[in-house]
Length: 369
Image (cartoon, rainbow, N blue to C red; front, side):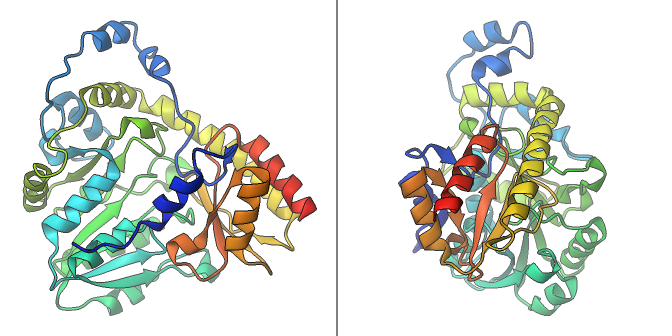
């Protein structure tokens, strides 16, 4: 397999753990193990007694039952737990795609959603979001992209990096297009439950039919990236079985402590969700005022969901700007070039409590430079 370097991850590797403020993180404010164990009186004792043997390859039954509560009509045997969302993406692509297949991918995107398919030899078509329409997607364009050998449609909503939330009627139309054309819908839903209004939340793709696969993870809305637990949920037995068989060649099974803590967290996920949404709401108010103050230099399309947005730098090179910012002010933003975006955008993250201090550091930088 020949695969290109993962630009986002290589960029983070240079800076993420050597700066004062990561102002582009896609995850939300995290918790400690102590925080999680405090949810239940006996959790600490149960955690200390946890055996450290191998776990079930598909994920512990208790964890899969908790994951099912996120969905409307999914059973534990339709959930496959992975080591993070990245493993699930990789295994789905390798299990279900071949060199003769065509894949349509929502763009801009987290690189692996398209790059893994390209490394397999697939023909990849970008379904481009329209910046002038608040990063909306056009289903008419999606239909035009279909080919006789289209095998999968890959979407991400709520969206990384723009914060776009697909309207419910469009999402159902996309699902119907996939179903009616015998195509698998792979729906990256890692930011689900971080919508700013609960009534805007989309149904999970896996609840719309056997043609769909939903991707979830502990990292984003729940603020627990260090647990490295992700999953897919699907009613498609062929997809599930092929991915489960291929997992025997990657991680085989997951970390027992991570599964225990993920199960515990998901039992109390509504508390985690409300905590995250409050942090995002408070920070968005600060960002709205910040971008208004700098409207001549920075352009801002307010996100509709999730902890990230895709702002635009006006009249300067975004890579040089981000490089200068991180080196002189210790603040990390993510240039849109890591998404192969030509529009001079940068990703900003606002799911963490230290945003006010990071934003002040950015403001000070803008006043000097």
